[in-house]
Amino acid sequence: MKLVTYNLNGVRARLPRLVEYLQEERPDAVCLQEIKCADEAFPIADVRAAGYDGVWHGQKGFNGVAILTPADRPPVLRRQGLPGDPDDTHSRYIEAEVGDVVLASIYLPNGNPVGTEKFAYKLAWMERLRAHAETLLAEERAVVLAGDWNVIPTDHPDDVFSARAMAHDALMQPESRAAFRRILHGGWTDAIRARYPDGPVYTFWDYTAGCWQRDAGFRIDHLLLSPHAADRLLDAGIDKAHRGREKASDHAPTWVSLD
Image (cartoon, rainbow, N blue to C red):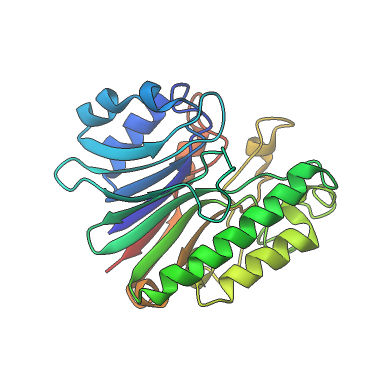
């Protein structure tokens, strides 16, 4: 199974790139983030024309997540929204059964600027995710938490082109990283680092300042595997070439392959 996380930065704006990706790569599941459309505006007809079906949790103009699978193996929706705050109106979490795997598509809050309610929301959301991740582990199944986590795990060049340039960003604050580690150390495996323990593996390149051309990227798209999923790990990687295409997302599709 090839399971992909792909922040589209707008499903309408990137629809040709999404259809292209589905038709060229034929993944077994794609977790989308930042679809940026209301539920009724999600382009499901185009997705179905490409041979896929899905479940989604939209929000007009912002956020929004989805899980797509081949049409003959549609995902079975388990949950829309992260538990723990009934007043949270952001569409940032969706969870489904994909074959015998529980798959979540996650769009974690950015949190900028640091020191504001946006950063506090990010940390509170991560704590809710940690608590929910514990309940998923308790099911003792293959679970994959896939998405744009908006956390750069370390200052190392393997994770970020310039720690100094990003030092004041919410993605690199000690609190953000500690929250990420609390989740990871609860029993999850970082699929990309399990496959590539050393060397730069970037998943995001900003549109400005020639970041793509200079390979000035960083790693914020992560796939965390439960022990049962980690036992089935075959490979993981970045479909980096798709970031270089015309009118592409600023994220590259990031994936894990399970036996």
